[in-house]
Length: 265
Ligand SMILES: [Mg+2]
Image (tube, rainbow, N blue to C red):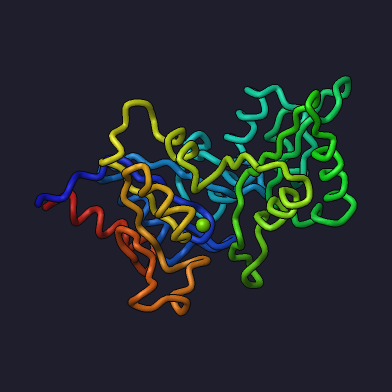
């Protein structure tokens, strides 16, 4: 059967295009080549530590050519959710990430908690404040726990590091309030990242997280290509438990080569 033409690629950032301030091998060139072959790109990220502005500046600085509005993040999607639902949240976010979110209304009581990756804020006092906001839940007082994402762990400069997921689960456990999860791997996120009228059969997702990037996108009918850079740890897998993704490649650059080759067959 002829391979379907790839028209749009959703590309994960951290671990796929770069690890901290280092592009993955050949990624800057590969991104250029992908665009030259007419494939539309959009960058999708669960990064919640940095605002879109900071992330954009950083990627430009390390050599990537992109526009700010090509980045679609779970933080932006969460801000949209807060606005739509007119929430007045307690934010467990970094100061930088906080700049992407709607301001608080001092005249209304807090009615929700928004959790992203905020290493400096995950201490007892802050978590306890979040707990108290959610504990007010009653028949008359609705509360919401919003998880920008529920990542288990990620790859930091000094090794593997704890994600926000366990703090979200902890708050759920102690309050009985189930979280609304915004970012990857939710269907809502992938669908809202695609321009209107896009055929999912023409789209691929490229990322370093088998579940959040690849399987999530595959559930809505896209292809999911996994890269072995970033958080992916090949030693965790063997022939029997390897992730059931559409393809596994050493780097982003190898995925691009595969896509370009398939365009000409
Ligand atoms: Mg990643």
